[in-house]
Image 1: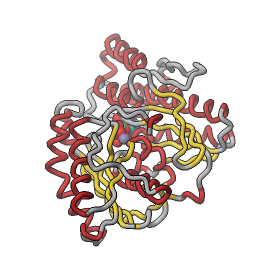
Image 2 (image 1 turned 45 degrees about the vertical axis):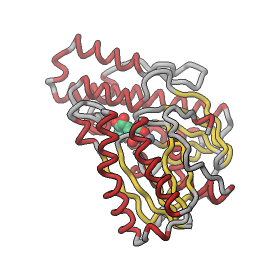
Image 3 (image 1 turned 120 degrees about the horizontal axis):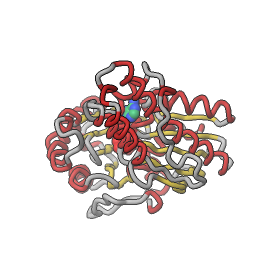
Length: 343
Ligand code: KG4
Ligand code: ZN
C-alpha cells in the first residue's frame, strides 16, 4: 500500500510517503524563521505559509520517493489537535486528493502520531511492532505534556497532563525571558550543557504529587523573579549558562520523576518518550539513567522524528488502515481541540 501523509498542525509543513509502512520520503519545511520575529507562532501566518509550502513540499517528497500521485492507495492528514487554520490546509488538501483519486482518507490524531513515533526505526524507517511492549509514554512538546499508558498498539489511556504550560512552552518562555530567539528550547539546552544546574534550586512543581498531572507556569514565574532580582545574570556568560542548566534540571527532574512513578504504578516494563522536548539532551540522559536504575526498557523517539513530521502521521494511518480498514469521511471537519481520550 502506497500512502501519502500530510502534517500541518502547527508550524511545520510536512509530507511523507510510505510503502507498506516503510518510509520512502519524509519532507519537513519549518516556519521557524517566519515566526522568530514575533517570538512565537502567529496562527494566521502559519496557515498562509502552509498554503504556500504544501505543494512544493509534496512535490519534493513525491520526487524523492520516486512515485507519481496517481499510484497512491491512500491519503492521510493530521485532523487535530492544533491551530485551526493550519489544520484546515493539510486536511482539505488531503481530502481533495483522496476524492480526486477515489482512494481512502484517514484523519489522524496528532498526539497518537507522537505516541507511536518511538517505535519507528531501522533503514528504511518502519514501525518495529515486533519489538512492541506495553509502555508508559511521555509526550512532551511545545503544546502538550502528558503521560499515557499504552497497553497495545492503538490501545492507550491518558493518565494525566499539564494543567497550565507545557514543558516545551516553559523552555520557550524562559528562553524568551533571557533573550534567546524562538523557539528557545534547543538553544537553552545548548547553554545548559556548559552550565552547573546545582547553582540553582528552582521549584519542581507537582513533582511529589500523586496525580499524573504537571504544572510549569510557576517555574517560569520564579525564573522571572530571579532575573528581576539578579539582572546582572544576563550579562555574565557563565551565570547565564548556570541559570539555563538550573531551569533545565528542574523541568527534567519533574518529567522523569513523574514518568518513572507512573511506570511503577502501572507495572509497565517499558518507558517511551516523544515530542519536540524529547530532543533535549538533559531529558534523554536522565531518562536513560533512571530507566537503567529502575529496570525499565527505554525507547526514545529518534531526534529527527521528535519534532512534527508527516512520517509519524503516516505510520498511524498505515496501522489503522491495515488493522481495520478504518477510514474518515471526506467531509470530516478539523478537530482543533480533539482529546487523545476520544481518539
Ligand atoms: O513536537 P513539537 O515540534 O511541536 C509541538 O507539537 O508543539 O515541539 C516543539 C517544542 C518547542 O517548544 C521547542 O522549544 C521544544 O520542542 N524543543 C526543545 C528542544 N528541541 C525542541 N526543548 C528543549 N530542548 C531541546 N533540545
Ligand atoms: Zn507535535
